[in-house]
Image (cartoon, rainbow, N blue to C red; front, side, top):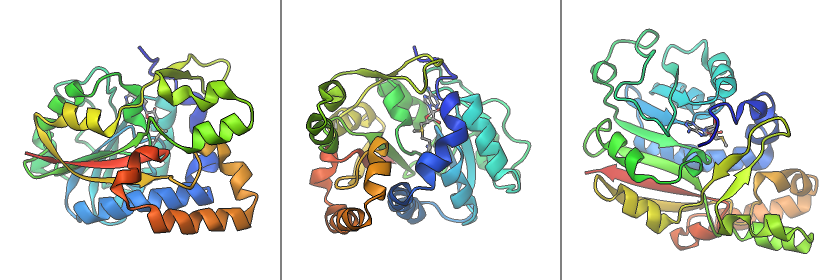
Length: 273
Ligand SMILES: C[S@@+](CC[C@H](N)C(=O)[O-])C[C@H]1O[C@@H](n2cnc3c(N)ncnc32)[C@H](O)[C@@H]1O
């Protein structure tokens, strides 16, 4: 099982190396467009694996109440610092591998709400890969089913198993181990002192099957089809002409659901039955 603190070393630089990059911002905007479609001012939304709290902060700016959760204390500290001034966001620890009946430490900061009392939410989401840290998704789907109101949307940003960039880029650079890493369960080590994290790459079909007892799949979109995975951001962002061309292609083809499996991440939405 992954160590709860595995992502701690990434927390201090996460916004600099991902959130605030040109490519990171573009990809997040695509997700936020989807979040804005489903979540309105006054809604109560559950976020899983919130990282530094960027999406919770953005949603709260639109009047949405967010319970932002993560397992890493480093990420939770960054999320608390970012959202401290905003009474609509509450940050709490939640480990997706040991889902509790009641998420503890919740209910003090937010305005009272019938959703908070019972921990029932209008919807939920998880952006940029937290679900890749799980080895199966049926348990999470069943747990969410007890917490999302009927008709509510759960949106998930998941690292895809068939990302085209990775085999092409890393094969060209002679790194065949990295080129093929998504084709098997693999590990990721945030830094030399940190324990490795097991990463799994579920297909769209697998997630759809695991969520099917409680949720209907209603939407899929690629995220990062022509734009590269984050380890290649610096190389591409230092070439503005290439970056602009890739952005044009991404805008043109970035909504085709049939291409989603070939992107770095896919965005998938389920509706609670
Ligand atoms: C790549 S970051 C994405 C962060 C954020 N959602 C975003 O959009 O930038 C993945 C996050 O998943 C969290 N995570 C990994 N395993 C988890 C688990 N078992 N339970 C809860 N969160 C987890 C990590 O701590 C990390 O913050």
